[in-house]
Length: 346
Ligand code: PHE
Image (cartoon, rainbow, N blue to C red; front, side, top):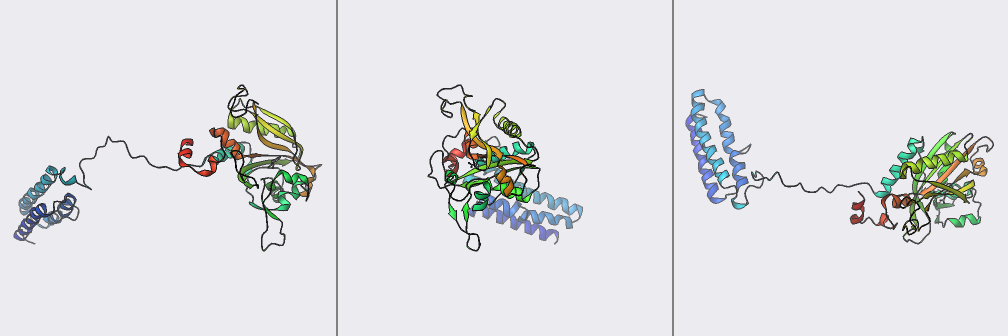
């Protein structure tokens, strides 16, 4: 390309610019087709490299004249026709940014994570069990004989697995079968917590659901005693609700522990001081856990000599902890996934 060819090309570009302004004053388009990376003028100016320094000076000046003309046009008309779409010089950097719709963990997951963190500090590890469970692990090995009335404590969804010889399956009614599975799988000492869904044939209301979450915990070793249980639960509850939380153990019955206890926590809302407290109804205490020393029969069922080994176990509903931690008074809120409510929690 020689000097006159270059100049001819430049004047053609100018003509095309003039007609583009007349015919189709689309600013993005004008910027793109003349000044953009692959714009006509940009490409022509790039060719200057091929010329001698003197020619370069002359041609460069001419080329820049057109460039300035185009830029001036764009600048002067930037507010017309809606301005630039892509190359707007009108960005208001002081405007607040658009709110991002970030996701967050479900309150049940938040609670569970806090519980797990708390027990990990005490040396517990996490174990998971199947939701469709053998009758043997859910009941029999836990010292609920067939037809024993204690089974009525847990309304059960029975089912069967087609290809299995053993037809006695059910949706697990509690996380306690993980005690059996773990004792068969590991050797003591073992400190395990096991969270997960459990199922009971119950009607749904503000405090009941046919599927909910529990967390099981147990410690099996030589010389494990009731005082280890009390210390462990106290450390956990104080870690979760603060040092002021108090614990009360009273006798209770579960076939797989002896002695068995019901564990209450001093009301985390009123501290037992408000006669009209909505949460504890003025009782001052909240039922939070079932617990006890693992029954000798259960240890035997897992092949452990109860004269050598002992253990404690406890179980609790995760929903109850969630409701107390977040001040929720209806369980159903946790399953309906109404974003207006979930968003208030985080
Ligand atoms: N599995 C019992 C229940 O669901 C709770 C529990 C666990 C009680 C461990 C004692 C020991 O009701």
